[in-house]
Image 1 (cartoon, rainbow, N blue to C red):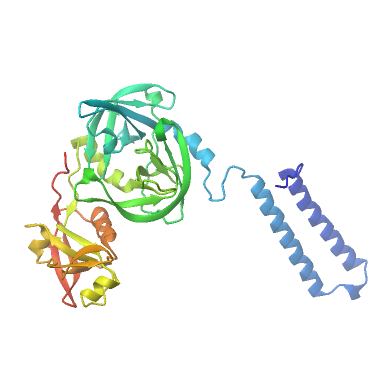
Image 2: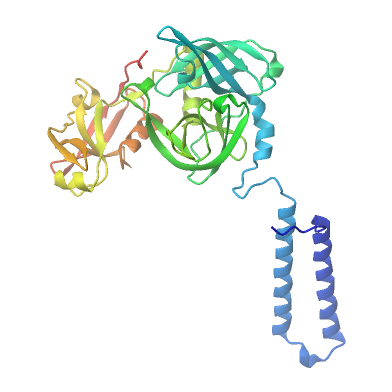
Length: 400
């Protein structure tokens, strides 16, 4: 690596001025003292272009010298950590299983709601846990109680009594503006190593992740990101380049590298009021089907050209989909080693929004639909496109 010494911003600024003066002096000498035969409009323009190029290059170098903390991704991790790390906490407790007590450790962060401070974390961090405590960055710890939780979104809100100086609320903003490739950072306590920060990018949006706390339902509209997370990170914030919380980390894939998942902040913002005031959230829309992602092989077996959408394999008895007249599959087949029930309806859009797969269906229901609303479905049945109305129900309570 080449190391240059003595070339600072002041030097670059002086160099820019010197170049300007030298070129101007040359131009004046050539125009007023030199031979006209050597000065033409084309050479003047070339000189000006050269000056502009040199000036732009030097200005870029000067700007780079003045922003040493900004990484190539555009994420100022130093500034974000200094601003937000005090708002990230350690959540601990004891879990009894088979007569044996074991310690539980996770992360959380401070959030302000209606003038009061709370801790947001994952439900799986505190479910069935006794003696819950919250430890702040300065090492001070306090007992906490769970005031609200939602297993379907893996969210929990904690309350504790502590001096106001301990609380440093993070700003939670909408996650709807996130795009793939956007830089993000995560702060948490992996393996009990408090205040650990990692960074990466948004790898994908609108994922669904299965979780035992959600029963047969998947956690929807999940953010996939590349920042490293490990056990103990659960409940910590996912932060954008402004240091605002856009998600809450909750899962990783075993033996993966750089593959984490976060519940979007829109879910937190939507549920927070209900979790604090009622202790739960019961506005999850329910359609009453199980299905599979369409693909080319299934399209061939269904005698259709639609290779996208959600193939309905089963209907919940008495559920909204059955009441609306949708049809389930009846013929069992194996495609590439996986079992399917074919012959059912294929949902290809809801209210005019194209559904590519089950992730898209789950995300639409989580973000844009509420129980009691009537949706307009476009389905494919026996090779024909049909329109059907479906009135959404409410999910049954999550597993206890």
